[in-house]
Length: 279
Image (cartoon, rainbow, N blue to C red):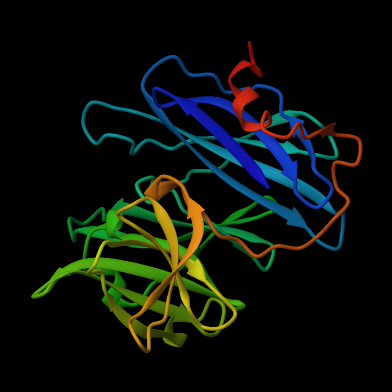
């Protein structure tokens, strides 16, 4: 698991944590250190079964005065096997990754983000999924159906539903805020996208975080707690997990022995000590 900390919008610390064995590793400071206004986006995954190498990819967008963060980003990669950051050149990524929902999904060897781009012919905003292969270290694209590209990019987030990718679309309806859950049943096939269900975000429901094996939906609510929502009955059950509404993140979990030589987690002091890791 990759944990990142920020202070005043700037990257503060990066830690890899293995909850299976309660070990963590503090990463060295990234090689790209812009002083001007910028935005950085992270993606984390593993190359299985070829090298068993965990990699962290970082995209740094520099702000311009005209279009915001629309310039090609700088790209760097950290590998656990090598233990160092290295810059990657030769990519012209014309899409800007949506930062608002702070979501990405790793599956099938690829990191996935929601991205947007202003179409060159003036046709409006183009929204799609940008992919990054952990093994080959190349970027790709997956198209979204028209039903998901007609709104604003900030209204979309990506997650996993069982073994498939899911995109959650937020919008405003007659009865208030709602969200639709769309699932890509066949990977990379545009025609395989289908709407799973629609949820009216009433009673304090705020953001879809992920999905459980029993079919229920994990949703953060206004009181900054996580609940399990039954889309059939419309009822939710508190899970006793608290946190800032937009800080919750769900990813499929698989035990491993990675970071055996890492530092031991100190109960009550692991996250609290992240602030001084690069000082």
